[in-house]
Image 1 (cartoon, rainbow, N blue to C red):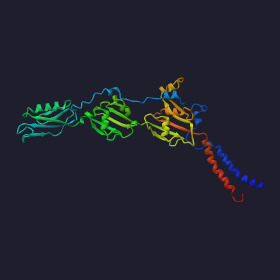
Image 2: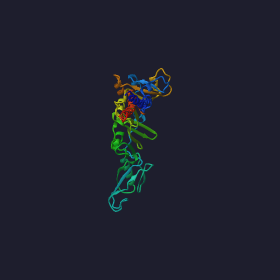
Image 3: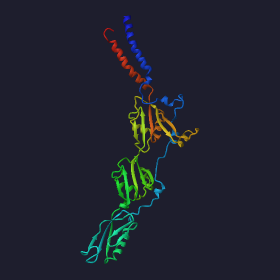
Image 4: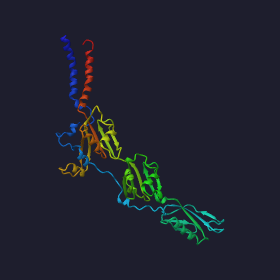
Length: 379
């Protein structure tokens, strides 16, 4: 009996050594990123970034007011004079004559509709038998009287009617995530930005994530749609040639580590907290995540870094790893209040026991093989 046991031990010894080898090399198992201790250690020299545990002061110092609004130049823009004729406008002109053989209608008394006339680059329109007439800058009634007076020198007591056919001289381009992108004229009802957006069918995505960009010549201004709703001053007058671009917020963040849905995502809301960002990617994996190791990696500009590290001489951006411990009493509040910024990286470390779980998963097949060997005939 003793010899049998000794023989079995000899056969199982290589398997035991294999299991020991796997145990000792467990640190080489696959993982999603650095561990908590590797990020926070100070024994490996300069890691190239600073580590800060998030508290109320840090939350306040790092907060940036991203409310935006148009510059004074835009706010002081006068309204487009829609009651006056502009270059490019199309006009409908009709002439009545009180004689049997009129100048424009030799057949008899009646109305003579002229072809739709366009105000040319010089601001002029052409009227038969009269020639070029200045139209730009005049009201319809003023132009009507001018044309009537000129025709009166050619025919007896003419009557003239002029109506705007198309305000092409005051076009605004509305593009982006609106229901009806295109070119729209500035009319009496669409002199300002909000009515023009409504004329284009309104936005087709969540207003909370929409930004409005207005380009005018060499100038450009941008505003959140919600700020446009909230502040009437931002409902600025439009000018001919303006381009209104409605676009979704382009800010992104990357989430890595022990998360249910690690990925790169657009900001789902205007102000995105760490807690909401974690929720957007499915939250932590219960079986593997370390709630004490929620890190946010960011490069802070000089002005904020100087406030974070008042004792350091800082002349260039500083890389910072912010740590939020969700197991602390205030951890959830810090995650709720600490706001993310464009291109932030959110990373959740694995719990320490996760490495040993992987090692055991590697050893389990070995143990199973040993059990199978034990049941072979002759052993």
